[in-house]
Image 1 (cartoon, rainbow, N blue to C red):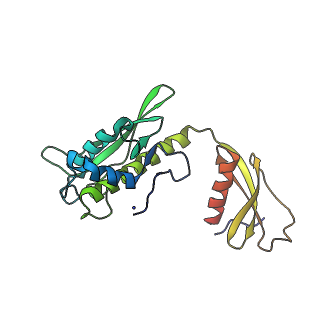
Image 2 (image 1 turned 180 degrees about the vertical axis):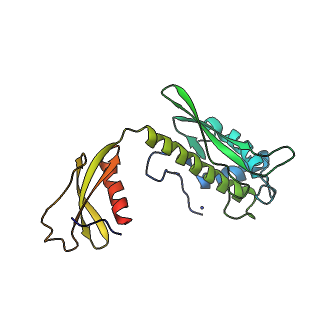
Length: 224
């Protein structure tokens, strides 16, 4: 065996990095239309809504409240176990810093859980500080959806039982191609690699199932 080697597009589903089901499905195109149709005026989303004005978190409070509990599912749909998303302003009062912490409320096995993101600075919600108004709001909601989906996915993976699987494969060009998965950790030796000039490979990984193990093994072995 060889050693391992080394937003105007609609994005209706904001998914976790490892392909798990998102708890928030966000459609930026629908969000823009919703804001243009009157929501922007109703919730104070104007030219002053920008990182430069340190006003994003305050406006985001209003937007999340309006979208909460699946009030506008075509724009922002929450899936169980997620029940609510909030933004908490930091250093408000006499010391406004324009930042905040996003929290996500979930109910798992009848138990309430609150997840919190790392602190988001005033300039952490949009790629460009000068982006303002409706365009900023569309981008900000996407950023929040990404943050919540990522945190929920980390929790899901932590709660998912994991086993060890050994994945077998071959090299074709620069691609690691898997051809089999065996439950358990196994030392793999020998094998006829005469048909595969670049050799065979095997790697044991922890994963909740064989399909995930196969994907994780390919990612890991190609990273080396």
